[in-house]
Structure formats: C-alpha cells, structure tokens
Amino acid sequence: LSLHRQKLALGTLFLGLPLAWMGVFVVAPIFVVFWLSFTSYDLLTAPKFVGLQNFTDLLDDDLFWISVRNTAYYTIVTVPVGMALSLGLALLINRRLPGAGFFRTVYYAPVVAPLVSMAMVWMLFYQDTTGLLNYLLGLFQIAPLPWLSSPAWAMPSIIIMSIWKGLGFSMVIFLAGLQAIPLELYEAIALDGAGKWRVLRSLTIPLLMPSIVYVVVTSIIASFQVFSQVYVMTGGGPDNATTTIVHQIYRTAFVHLDMGYASAMALVLFVVLVVVSLVNLRVLTRRETL
Amino acid sequence: MAVLSIRRSSEAVALQPPHPIAAVPGRVRRSKALRNFFGFYLPATVIAVVMVFPFLWMVSVALRPEPEVYAYPPHLIPHSVAWDNFMRIWTDPRMKMGLMFWNTLVYATVRTFLQLLLSSMAAFVLARYRFPGRNIIFLLVLATVTIPHEVLVIPLFIMIKQMPFAGGNDWLGHGGTGWLDSFKGLILPGIVSGYSIFFLRQSLLHMPDDIEDAARIDGASEFSVYWRICLPMALPGLTALGVFSFQFAWSDFMWPLIITRTDHIKTIQFGLAVLQSADGTQWSLLMAGAVIATLPLIALFLLLQRFIASGINFGVGR
Image (cartoon, rainbow over all chains, first blue to last red; front, side, top):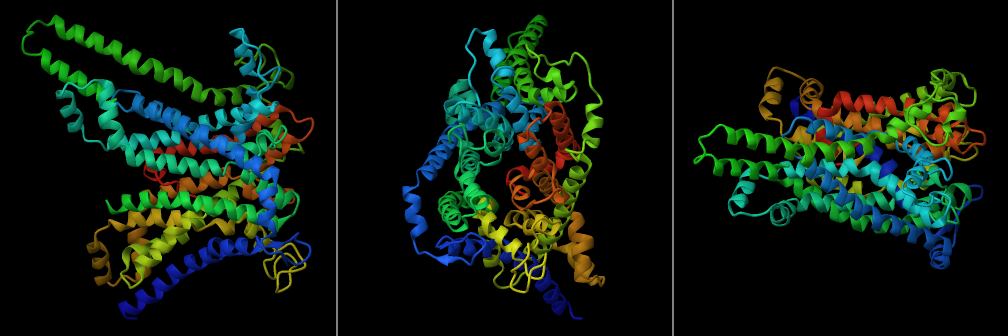
C-alpha cells in the first residue's frame, strides 16, 4: 500500500467515525429540537405540527418567566461575586512561598467533588432548627434564617453553595493568567513608585483581561444551565422561588411529557447561549493563534 | 503575590548600600516573616478551613449514629463513632451501594476510554495530516462547543428511546424502549465532543514532524505512527482529558436522571439524590454514601494533579 493511499484510508476512517458520531449525537439533535419546538408531542402519539403555538404560549407562561427571572437572579449574583472572590484568592496565593501549592489544592477541592453529594452536605448546614448555619447565627445573637424553606432565602442559599463549589475553577484560570505576566513589568512599575492598589489597577487587571473575559463568559454559560443543585436542594420550590430555565425544561419534558413545549424552551435557551458562546469561541481561537 | 515580593526586593535593594550592620537584615527578615504571616498564611488558612469544612462535616456526619446527626448544639467531632455506617451502606437493601458504585465505575471508565479513543483519532488526523478542507472541518468541530448539553437532552432522549431494533423496537424505532435504561444509552451519546477533539489536537499540534517521518522511512504503518508515536507523546494531554472525562461522568446527574428507569444502571449521584428525597432516609448513611462517592474523585485529583492543570482552562471532558 502506498503511503498516500494508506494515509487516505486511515484519515477517512479516523476522522469519519468521530465526525459521524458527532453528527448523530450532537448536531442532529439540534435540528430535532428545532423541529419539535413547532409541534405538540407527548411521546405516545405522533408529533402534531402546531406552528408557532408553543412560542406564543411561552410569552404568556408565568411559570416560564418566573424561571427566567430566577435564572437571571442566580447569574447576576453568582458571576460577579464568584469572579471577585476567585480573583482575590488567586492574588492571595500567587506567591512563591512554601505552602502556596497546598492552599491552591485545597481551594480547588470543591470543584473536583461531585455536585450532588456536596449539595446534600449543604442541605444539612441549611436545616432550619438543627442546622449549623443557624447555630452560628445564634452565637452572634442573630435570629435563625429560613434558608431553604422560604421563597426569599432559598435562592441565596443555592447561590452561596454554588459559589463555594465553583470558586477554585476561576481561581486556577486567574492564577495561570497572573503567572503569564512578566515580572519585569512589576519591577518597572515598582521603580515608578506605584502603590499596591495602582499596580493592581493599572497593571494586573488590564493584563489579566483575557482571563477575566473567559471566566465571565464561561460562568454566565454555566449559570444559565444551573439544574442539579436546584433539583436536589429545593426541587424548584418553595413556591417556585428557585425553579430555573433548565429545571422547567426538565419538568415540562420529563414530568409533564410535553416534549414540543419543552423543546421551544430549549430552543430559546440555545439561542441565548449561542450568542454568549460566540464571544467565548473568539477568546478560545484567539488563544490558539498565540 | 508577585506584586508584594517585587516591592519587598526593591526595598531591600534600596536599603542595602548604606547599612553595613548585621542587625538590620535581621529586622527586615523578621518583619518580612510577620508580613508573610498576616498577609498570607493567616488569611489563607482561614479560607482553607471554610473551603474544606463541608468535607469535614460530611465525614463527621457519616461517622455518627443517626440520632446524633440532629444533636444540638452541632459539633464537628462525633461523640460516639459509628464505623459500621460504612459497612451498612453496602448491605442496606435500599441503598444498593455496591451496585451503584459498580455502575458508576463502568459508566465513567468506559466513557473515558471511548472518548479518549475517538477524540484522539480525530485529533490525530486534524493535527498531523494536511488536506484541503482541514481548517473548515476543524472550525465546524470547534463550533459544536457552543451547543449546550442541557438543550440536547430532549432530542437525545427521544433518539435513545426510538433506537431501531433495540429494546423491542421495530426498524422505525417504535414499540419498545430502545436504549433507555441501558449502559449503551447512558454512555454512547456523550463520547465525542468538540472540546475533547480541540484539546487533544492542541497537544498533538506542536510535535516535530521529524520523528514521524523517520518512523515512516523505517516502514512504520500510519496506524503505528498514531498508536506508537503520537499517542505516547500526547500522554499528558490524554491524561488530563481522561481525568476530566472520568470526573464528568462520575459526577453526572442530569443524563442518568433522564434515562434511568430501574436500578440496574443507577449511578451513585443519581441514587443518592433519590434516597435523599425518600421518606425516612438516614442522613448518616446518606453522608457515608456521599463520602464513598466523593473519595475516588479527590484521590484521582491528588494523584494526577500535575497533569490536569493544562486542561482546566478549557472545561474539557464534557
């Protein structure tokens, strides 16, 4: 077999198989979801074409808009708070001192742990009468909070747990960004007599911008898809205070078996996420050309 | 923090010439040690305690007799240690821990292996071969990373349910349950992703051509170029992707939740969530289960930590 023909055969097989797989299980489903969103389908009888009915229904669906609002609430709090805290952590441990590596590992541990198990531990913390958090509040003479059992506090509870879980991920990305900044620049700005605050504002933050953009975009995407902790910790309650878009998609499709309507929700989420992802893709490809 | 260390060294430089006395460097050293303590070790330790506390609590509750779970005031160190919780989770018929552990291991291992295989095949061709259309194909592959898994679950569920000739289905996929509630349905849809191909291509891209060409001159087949030269050289990348893929599958919740019908493919995370919402669940046993479900991932992370730093940036493994 000549080299050329061998390459052709192997290349076709090696590239064709994964691509065909992706075609079936990643690309085709998008078209299926698009088509289903114009139908009414309960899995038992054949899908019935209903035109734009699902989308006009969505506009009037209070529960869907509640889930949009909850998802926005989760995103608006989690992304900036998580970013500020993880940047702080990265700045704190980005130094050549013994033990810095140990702390990095410790802060990253929650990222590695499985979300569902960790959500259950936090449910114990959040117990109304016997939970640790209310006990700690009591030590400071603060009245106990109805963490997961009240509409007002359920979402903040989920947010606190999620921030704890995700901090290490952004921290590691910031650390990589910080370590890429040449030391000479710090020396130069120190010779100019810049204070700590000015170094951060006019050197560190600007040079860290690619990492910041990346962290913001990936956190927004992840926040729009929040599901497991909601399902486990509150089931969307109390009083729909924590139900999110993906949680509504799940309930509509797999509890109410309304596949067409759920597909319409999924398509809306998809369009929003693609817009966010395009920014992400630009960051990724820019990195690659470096 | 680099900023601080630079400032410190520049101060030291400024101090050096006019001070020949030995006492001054000593004081500088002591104030430096103090600053390290208050500026780094103290806050870092406090934060570390907060970050690991949920793990400590999980272990603590897992080691208690059930009544002590709700003891008030709460305490971290169990008054009486119930080691047998870790025995009972394996024998308690409601938990089926052995089966869940095995299922999760199968799901994570097989998925990881297949993902490494298929992704490295595509990555090999996209990184090492030159052919017209290569860049377009690569961009299309990369574009699929914008498709979120959560949006795909509805069509994937329907496709898996209507898989022709499987689970009592006819050739049109009607009449049976297809691949629902089977390992095929659990594993196969997720084994290739744009991320994994992109990531492995990165680690194959910067290899020198010479080694490959030398092997070809020696008469190596294209397959052995892939298998014996490229894969070993991409080992750090493969390890990182493998760890991420394993972690993802081990922690996966939504897909098992959707396609599991009976116990026989029930994974740990899904199984624990079901138990938690059931009436009369014992939290001490549940936490013992959570410890078992968490331990493998923590161990894997500690063992292979140095390999996975390169992969963290891209969220690979989905």
